[in-house]
Length: 278
Image (tube, rainbow, N blue to C red):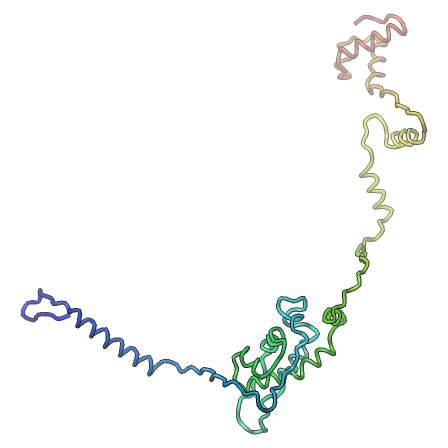
C-alpha cells in the first residue's frame, strides 16, 4: 500500500497489476528459501529392467506363503521359527574386517516376516520392490531367506506339515480333564450338613416323617394317607373342660378360638355325655 505523505488520511490501494507482481516476487522468494533449506531426501533410483541374456537371477521358492502370516493360524511370528529368524537376522551381513569403521546393523526381523508372508517366490528384485531397499541391502535379505527357509522346513510341527501337505487332521474324541480337586468331607461336616438340611416340622420329628415316607414308597399298588394331625392344644382344652373351665377361660389360657372350643365340647358331649355348660 502507498501512503500519501501530504495527507495521512488518504490511502491508495495497490492496483491489480501491482498485486500480481508482489505475489510473484513473494512466491519466488519462498521457492528459493525452500530450495536452500529443505531437507535432502534420498530417493531410490529406478531399476533398469534386465535383459533376458546371461544367467537368470536366483530365486527361492517360499513354501510358507499362505500358511504363515498375520491372518493365519500360526501368525506372522510362528513360535517354532522365532529362534531361526532372529539368529539369521543377527549374523554379520556386512562382513567388515576387524578395525574397519562402519555401523553393522542386523537385519529386521519384521522385514523377514513380511517377506515370508508376502512373496511366493523370493528374489533380490522382489525384495527390493517389496521393502523399498537398495540392491545391496536387499541382497542381504535374499541370502538370509536362503538360510532361513530350509531350517524352518526341518523345524515344522506335525500339524503344519499336514496342513502344507493337504492332509486332513484325524478327528479325536473329546477328552475331559477332571479338575475337581475337592476332598471328601469329614464326619463332623456331614453331621452339620444333615443338621442344616433337616426337615423343620411342627407336629412331628424328621425321623417320623422319614419313616412315613419310606413306608409309603415301599407299598405297591396301594396308597396310604397319613391320619390328620391333632391340634397340639386339643388335649389341654379337653382337660380344662373336664375340670369345669368355661369356654372364655379356656380361650384366654390356650389362645384357641371359642368356635373351636365349643366344637370340641359338643363332640365330648356326644361321646361321653353332658358336661358343665359354659
